[in-house]
Amino acid sequence: MELLRNKVITEGIVLPGNVLKVDSFLNHQMDPVLMQAIGREFKHRFAEAGVNRILTIESSGIAPGIMTALEMQVPLIFARKQKSLTLTDDIFVETAYSYTKQQSNDITVSKKFIQPGDKVLVIDDFLANGEAAFALARIVGQAGAEVAGIGIVIEKSFQPGADLLTGEGYRLESLVRIAGLEDGGVQFAD
Image (cartoon, rainbow, N blue to C red; front, side):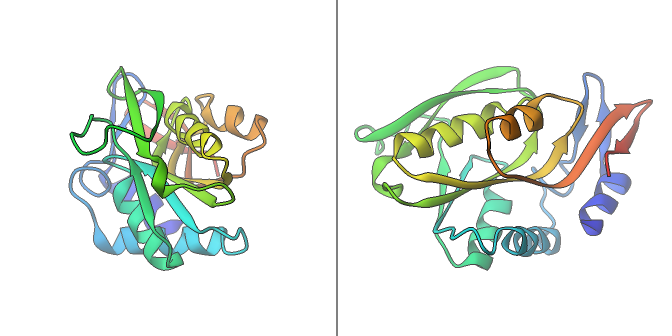
């Protein structure tokens, strides 16, 4: 996806520890034109998958998730990282480790929002080790629903997440694939 690739080149900042900072357009300040294009691209890539729900994780997955849901005309569900006073019973719970934040979070989704037979598209902003995507896929499985696919905005192909997800049989579509983050620059995989 050329628009996203150009944003990574012009505004992405490579930090130590294989971290790509994209807070100027993806996960702190958001570019609405880019988000809309991301939603359209995921709709195009998963048009035949029969998706009737989008699932993401708060907070960075919400913008690409909601734009994809808008384009596909289906609801967006986001897994919460923080316990909510109103979300106490009848929940799915999984643990996900954040590579960027270097911490584990229990993520929760209300059981009323994912039903057996649903076809759920998982959307997330980054894929590194695959922890968040696997946790979301496990929630879909707990519900008796099907993971229709996993859509990732930026994939770090040099980390194991993509290989692990595809090795488990998940359909993975990444809009930008990064082969490396060396010498302060971004090397793309495609």
